[in-house]
Length: 218
Image (cartoon, rainbow, N blue to C red; front, side, top):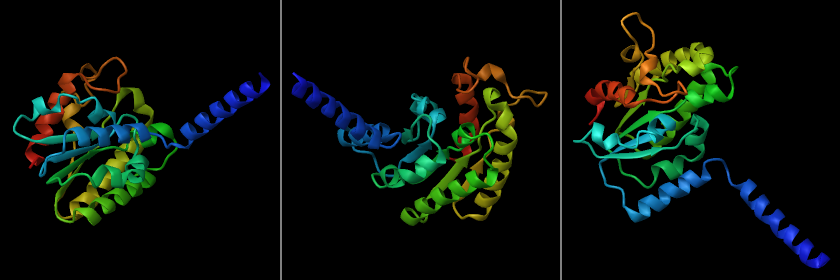
């Protein structure tokens, strides 16, 4: 009986250890691979990469009916994760454009994080994109003001400014600023476009983004 119990405990330890070895978001990436196997991704699509603002935009095709979009957002992801999984996120596709929304969670994970750190993380990922796709359009959506994360908005705002300056100097690259479009007549962010967590969007929030993004989309 003791031998059986010992073997069972050892098996549990091995399983637990193997699970711990898998990096965060590993399962999300495997799900993307499975989806690509079941439905081979089309060429010349617009590839969405980033965090939960894209993940939860499950009906994005309805907002852009004339566009072919591959949505590879995974909730909670940071720019560090885009860098870690860059090959998995880029190699399966042949897009004509990449649109990124990521960086908000980097600050949420560490409220003391300096803007320049996040900017450098973005630049690293941008470089990886350019190594694979030197000439396609690459756009970055500004980090949004989320009421639940008001305390870290100053760093986010600074990061936006620095990334905008970087993208302005890059060929075939745009910084898509959604900040003003999300504000009311008094210059305050519209809380009515968020769900209860004051972080994620209602359809009204995505409608605003659609109007801002449409002129930039190929």
